[in-house]
Image (cartoon, rainbow, N blue to C red; front, side, top):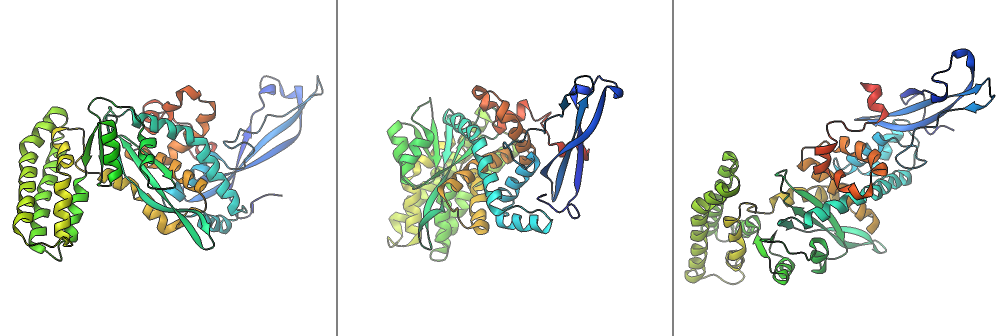
Length: 430
């Protein structure tokens, strides 16, 4: 029985040539029938069924029957075309359309598949792409400048009506090619310090820097390895934002001083400064502003009658305790002023939480981490995630394992983006 309604679902027919009769005259064989394979495909915004027609022929001379095989599927024995798998992943993880809503949309389009089948497709795709994300993490570990953050997620059942709290840890590495770096999401069951060491490794490179927020586990990791710890000015700024209602004048002064540092960064981007020119500009323009800010913060604590519980007091202490880390970027042009690039990368997780709320299992959370790593990094490098997934899902099984690093988005853009593998659907619609 068909898994779709032919009266409601568009069907594109692809007739496959039989190589065994390619050079034979028509009188040398007889077409005695055909075999048909159906595969679910997807155009952006619509579903299509690809109907593969393969002639079964009988060779008159040898009386043998022959028929070309059905095209290989990305998932062995699967009925989903690579275009559908890529679309399924993009809709869920880029556009935050939960699988149950995609299931409803498929049903409305006349496609009869189960929600469990959709879940299995996503998990299988994530498992297939896992080695690529592992290669990305290895690349990040070799970077001189790295950044790390964390955000909670409900994943796995804790008991009746309860979910466990896990954590997504995004890890960013500044690649040497100026392409914006790579980002890998890791799912871990806790917020423990061991996960920082597991993620970043213990190899120390010359002048290595870790950029993070004020969470103490990052400072512990940096101290243990003897590397520089850069602190995030955006997190410092938030403390003064929270103090605006209680101490409006002082908070406004702090925000204005920090804002000047960001205006200097805007000027650097506008002038496209890099390397030594960027460092010199920061030392000339930003360093005096930062030094004046810390002097002002010390004066506020010394002269103002502030309670320890006052939000301004907390913000001032937060900044002064991290003075050294907040100053690292001034002398290192490769270090960003904040972790906002990680915050932007993390955005799909809180947005996803509003749509799919939680992950039923830790396995599901691992799949989220794998697929978001690839999608976020694709967007970081101006790669269409759909084109990337359609190509890589077809390529990875026949790609040598030793060269899996060539399939990471950054390197894929260099080696394969000019002539990517396409779905048969693409050939039909050209």
